[in-house]
Length: 402
Image 1 (tube, rainbow, N blue to C red):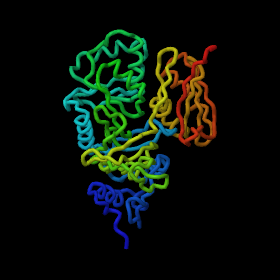
Image 2 (cartoon, rainbow, N blue to C red):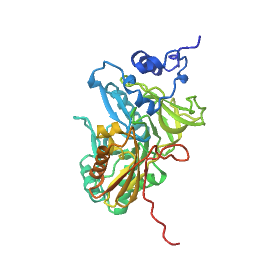
Image 3 (cartoon, rainbow, N blue to C red):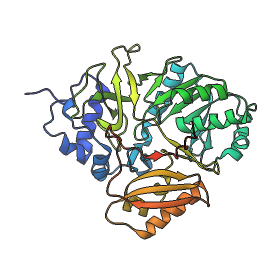
Image 4 (cartoon, rainbow, N blue to C red):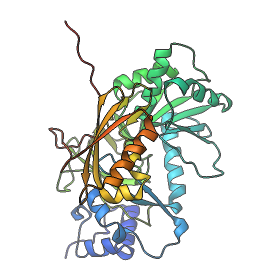
């Protein structure tokens, strides 16, 4: 008789697997007869979406269920639920990464997102909305940070790089005190972007890794080390595995699988986030380390009116509209002119003209009334040679005569 699926030698991992098998209808069926954790099939975003109601643990108090959508980084937004009771684990994970970066825990956090929504009464946090932020009003919006004292800028790498680019172009002193540090997350910060942020804000830059479905604070870089991510072992169990879910040896490249150790509303076991990485042969203390993390590099499109379209906010044309979520399977965007955008749409069933017009209208609401938006119906999204989906492409400048 094989050993139990619960006997991994990691108590927190055993506990969440046991809980899922006993309380989630999906896992009660999936885990029947499974003898090893490594034999649990990776949970793709598509499978999670198709089995949403069965993964969700029934009969929990509604206030415990925090429902949300992903940004659509794999081609279509995915519904998920986080656990309000996991709040202390999230705070501990963030505190761990602050300590790792040498940032004081009590520092004020400025959350830079498309449309940050902070819980009422939350102290020590300020939302900086990229929605509606353009070149012409950027300095005015940044000037509101002069009242915060010591603070960090924390948010999407591509958005922070765009802010730094505008400040570099402006070539004037910052309109507010410099932050203690900048912490980027979501898409992977490029070396060029890191340099821009360091020059613009004159402070250290750190990168954190995670996912909206689990926690954005699953791993973080050490000061002066931009390629090695130290894992938060108490927050989630992270693996690197081959396409069939077999664990890769340290130094071998594979897909990143995340098991959230604290979500008892919508358990995620061996969740495939769509990224590739290598588990380092060298750890950091008792923690393992991810290297060569790939899959999060984000394209940004700056329109002639100064509006910014990113892979993280492209799907706002869908996720605020339940009808669009129901009708649209996936979406890609291509800038076709200084103020024009083509959206390739994969419909779940057939084209819905009402939804198509709503998408065009929402795009204009987001990025400018004078934006020309064309919709193109396609059967599937285009793929990169690697097999990964791309979501957004900018209009490349035409090279002049040499």
